Image 1 (tube, rainbow, N blue to C red):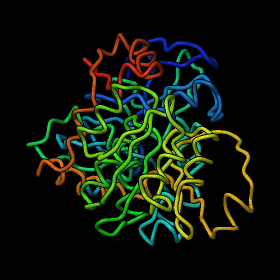
Image 2 (cartoon, rainbow, N blue to C red):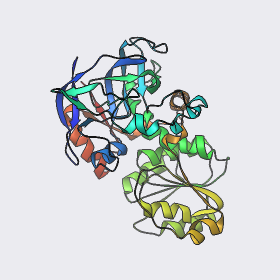
Image 3 (cartoon, rainbow, N blue to C red):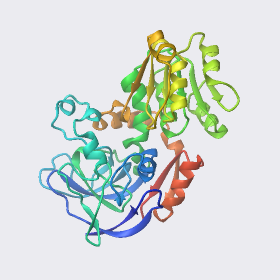
Length: 363
């Protein structure tokens, strides 16, 4: 079939909306009519080729929509089901069978090698194969994805808000609720108040953390952090966040989370966590320099990388929806909407910080 999709033809290029060819669903796959898709930092890392997904490609990995048809072997879904889409996993390795698909043996291959689990793509343009992302490629009006990528969405929840749950939102919230699992009263500092960091702050409030600290350089985002649960916010252009966090907590925060992916922030998160505790990194970035004795080993600290919030989306996304229904997780406040034809505006607004979480509506 034909469908409109936003194609990334080369590194650093803008997206171009084209009519592309989409193959029919194969075994365990389904055709989904996309309602909306979030723009995520991971999409930008691919556009910059910091994550070298083969180009040209159709990106988008925070999709949501309605199941149009199903392929052979699909048992969990039927046409008409409302779904949010998340990352792909094999479902067969020990980590998947243990309920930890973020550690799937084939995670990188399925999500970043530009093909589905069977080694092929469903997308092409003029006979040229287009790469896929996260085995969903939801910057399109229709997509084909494996049923393992999908999570059912209840009818009383606005479908268009649910796409970001598949990556950025569950990454921030899961780092706190699934990995750190703080005790009530624990202090936590979050570097970066974008959608991922703000999700971590909301999750810290759900966990009844004591002093919740948000760090950023954008005043409007710091105000949002206060609205969503931060007791204290720090503008790191005005004060040294390490000194300030140690002053506020006495010896350091019980936990720190770096959502920025910037090496300098990762090191600061490690420096201001208390001895014997953890700094969690959930933002993709590059190199960093640290003093192993002073920053890490000498105070028995741990620097821990967490992928996708250590989440099983089929379990965790419904949990987040329940928190949303109860008013404890108002992630919809982070969203700004854009028409599909304005996808490049959504991208630039995300990069500038004008939009906390840009969501592209397919119409």
